Length: 294
Image (cartoon, rainbow, N blue to C red; front, side, top):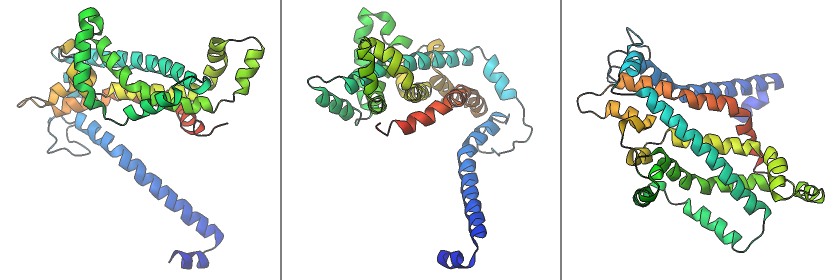
């Protein structure tokens, strides 16, 4: 059928048909992606606190759910959100720095066991993180005996657990990008008297900013939205993260506040959207350039 159409349509008509097809597919994909967000936002404006009668345009829409979310002292939403932002930012910064140092070592240095260590890191990433939950719990329990700020029930312990799970895959992502940076730059800098630290800080580091942004945002989103590890390690209400705190709104048997939960989810998504908007240029560059070795 398409061959018959190609034979009967002019070049301009074929181009218009192709453009129409592309726009139709694009619009469908955008609607498919935005519909869940629109549904949650609609639920946050519905004062009935029920998902059974939810509609995309709720009747009697109001900001009552947002008022209850902010004004309730028993559920410190603001503190939960600040806790999540603090933990995510610290984890992202540390993960980027440590992964960058490890990737630079694997990319530029040659040492015994280098290939075996890289394969080991890749093999560890094959197993799901939840398989290590018991081990992480026991390790943090032991660490807390000597360093209380890094034990169970602390943000430091949660950050430590996140870092352990993020360094492996991040090191592999960064190594591919580091390999794409020409080694001629290293050799030229050494001729001018630069050492390895100066080469990394002043030459390599500025060139790999796109992959640093990618690793940073992936780590930020992963830690910001995590529920499993945070719910196991953090038990104090004031120290809870946003995901764990919001779950308290819908976990009750008789007090499921779906409207308030939707309001919290809507506000909680703002930091991730802002991070994407600020770093979108670096994200595109980091996901494409690292696959090509220069």
